[in-house]
Image 1: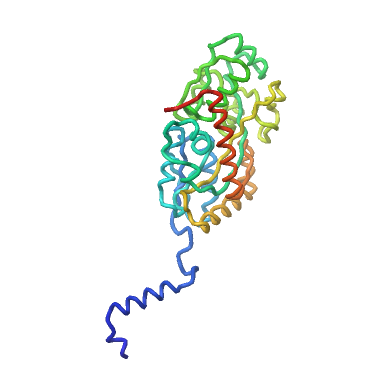
Image 2 (image 1 turned 90 degrees about the vertical axis):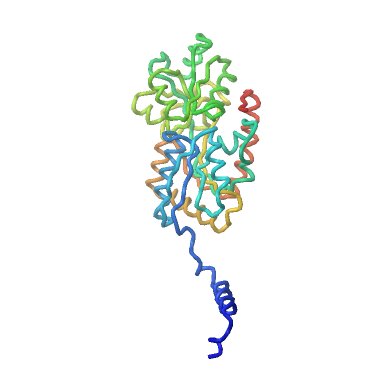
Length: 327
């Protein structure tokens, strides 16, 4: 009974040592609260569409809601920077795309964060085809007809993108460069508004992610000409590649990945990677992705990190060759 007369600080120390001695599984397992998935673009684009599909699929696997938040602006830099500055605890994630992770470091004179140092690669969720589309009113049905039409109307055509320096703008600039075309770039605040104006005929053509454009093609609102890929898309096997349409060497693929703040614990990264891989094994989700023009992947964190490093170099060369720059 002598313990009743021990000083209180000794009892507190004993309790602390007892807690420290608990096995790891006694601690709260990750995740034990809702997770935020930051979409760095406006609603309506492929990042938003695929991100919401993934968030819904991850809920039953992780046992916690995955809440989607759109934080658009500055080519994805606002959303990317928000995640880069968040606590590295796995509760704030980025639905990453090429723009804010591998293109913007070469494009922006002043980046608010360093994707390679301030974010942790978890997995490349999918690679997706891009698609070139034109308005229904344009009197062309093939890529070759478009090129002839564009050359006969120098400076008269315009193409849209979800913003200055976006992959869609760079794809359009690359087309102009390779085909010797003159066309005006019209930036929008997101893919959704750009598509709306394209369908209405306020701009003439666009090269952007297939998940956002293909539904408009299937609805008859836009006309598809070609996919800038090395093979036809499963979702649209009737649409030829640029090479098949007579313009070889024009390939611009897109992708979506999952990233977290730097220094996220390896156990959390592994848990999230395993959850995404499991979600992508679901036949219904795979089918939905493929219907939209996205091919499910689920690469390892190391593979995704290497992909980001390699593509940063590739896109950097394209940014330099097109002369695109944002202050």
